[in-house]
Image 1 (cartoon, one colour):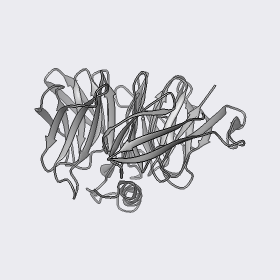
Image 2 (cartoon, rainbow, N blue to C red):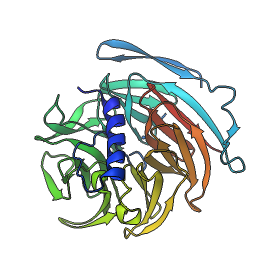
Image 3 (cartoon, helix red, strand yellow):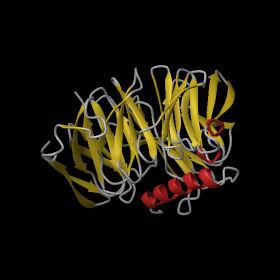
Length: 367
């Protein structure tokens, strides 16, 4: 299996450079960036011993440093106090998801799926997926479709037993983002299609959009799919067995400097992280641009929403998570994460971010 962390880093920078220097060039190799809406990812003083692939991995809950809790952000000192804590979880955390009781984490080199409850690792299952979602007692993950595994797959794991209860194979395809909705399980295939999978079966419908699809998020009968190589977000309205598609070209807003990545749908708005323009796009349900928020880090890669706040992770250079008031859309604070923060999930009290270059998670807690 390739080094996913290096792939994420190199391809994110390559897409950003191509969008700035050669907006007409089609780069078809973007890998491993995903995001999810409430899940799209997840984690005081405890030790746990986890067995992954027959090897014991020590998981250490590290108390926050004295200068981290509580602290006020230097760039936004008048707004919000932020508390951060760190949890070591094994080699190369990639994707995160939240359900009502647990945080789910996939690790790249260990190829494990970890369940974390109350700050402790409870169980380890077979994993290694590049994207996660959890719904109705099932954890869905996508993986494969690269040089080591030519056929990609979508699997559903029972959250109680760890048994794989559904498996869908995408022959010769690389699946990335996944999101579960009442209309089905939606998977972005890098070859250019959005797959709509029926829970409980191995058949799926293809919706042709364009090469280089990455993240997918579904809400209220509408699916939003990122196509960063073209600077496009697709709006797909699902109506029974039919659908309507519309490309939203963000490059038209910024003279070609856009490569939308992670996204979240929250309270009638869609939030889209864009590393090429170093900004966060806000769209309404119709796909119209409501606002573009700057000051969200050097390379925003993923976004999550929960409670009053929206959280944006910046993958390179500054290693921060920016916190935004979801109602006023004002930047309130930023919190330091570890190296290579990427996938992020949020709940009513804060957020979890995967530090893919540091083998850890950062927990961000707000008042």
